[in-house]
Length: 301
Image (tube, rainbow, N blue to C red):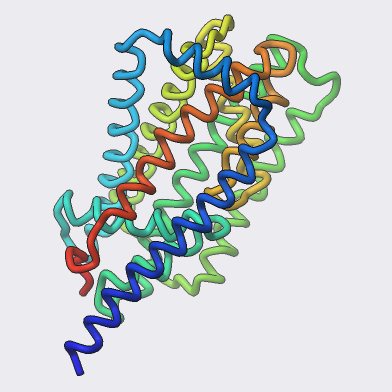
């Protein structure tokens, strides 16, 4: 009976990963299809002339980005169970693979509970909740800075709209966080030291994530100075979380936000090229890694 269950689990896992792959590729292709053929030729030409050190730097930043995400999960789950970096990496990448095709990455919650005894289910959800909410708060914090920068230096808005955004964020973010925690039935709290560590990892990850995109813009021929590009990227991320969606079509939302923020500052092909390059290295690469993890290597329970 146990052997039969193991076989079913093993083949079922392969089938699930195949479905994730097919669905994710369909969404990505559908999202990228509207980009004109001439734009792809231009982007390919620019990539071929890129200095190797720039590509190498972005690859290293991509590795650093996901290493920090793994360390964040390792720290978040530490009060419940101490795990090594390798196991944390497996759990993070596998959960990301399933969450890739679910709204708001909600598919990651039930999957991560499978790695631990069912009695600890709520605590695992709590740990993952803090990982997500800390990244959300980091994005909002930098996003508000970006909005205020564009308004004060470039007179982006002609009214009090930026102040309204800041006020709404400050008032409703704690309420949304509390409501989501209640809906997830999370009655306990994470130790303060752990919560601070997770938040600091989230801040660092956002900085690295942004720097990757800045280099992507540089490769594609961006003429803006880096400080302006950074503030624009943070503003773009704020617009992105206002319209949460599937990770698989995140590229469409991010491209739309970037086009709104950098309109008149950066040419559209440069924006699309930077977003596509960033998307491949930061989301498609870890997706492939998650799909390659063998079922019998999972440290489930």
